[in-house]
Length: 292
Image (cartoon, rainbow, N blue to C red; front, side, top):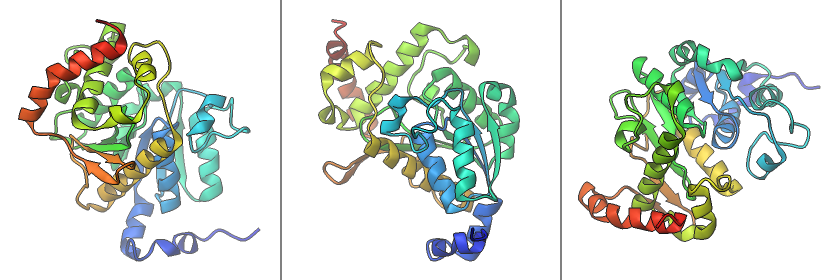
């Protein structure tokens, strides 16, 4: 077996980053909470980019249904804990990478994980976990990289001075502890996110609306597709690297959507246009969900 050498491992990075910047990546700690779909794809890119320390957290095991899109879901990892299985594969890519792996107890260690990290990636699909992550990151002055629940790849970057999604999207959770979120609050927050996605992107044109309506109504699991999930994870990785290197981020807290069907970026509409569209979009979502 050929001996591992970090310089040789990252030699083809040079040109995209300088040798000094590569060392900065090696010295960085990144916290990825949720290592399944988008979070897992982000980890896959970061470990190959040479990030030196990763904190990985997840509460689930890999399942067969994950194999259509999740970077670390294989037949031999099905049934294994996502964060632990991800860590083992990361070590096969870079045996020198430092890893802290957390499972169900990650919430009790969140302060430490956030404070140790240069930047945070939200790869969870759980409202309570996201609220805890954002609130902790803001308290520690850390930036969070995230994406929308959208049929199109998306990316947004919330700096400590920016409004978090619960403020920006109008979640009914502002005065609720993260571990006391109700089912109604979860549903309302998900609808507010869907509303934003429909107002500011052409996502509705690229999915079966009958299936999407069942998802929005909580009658079936969310749709996920490998090209969308993996592309989103790569966009997250770019923004992590921007943050680590102190480069300007490509996205802000409102974010943008990548439309691969038309080959263009879809950026948020103006506040005036959004306010005019909102009643129509709410009616559309109600009809789609069969609630009217």
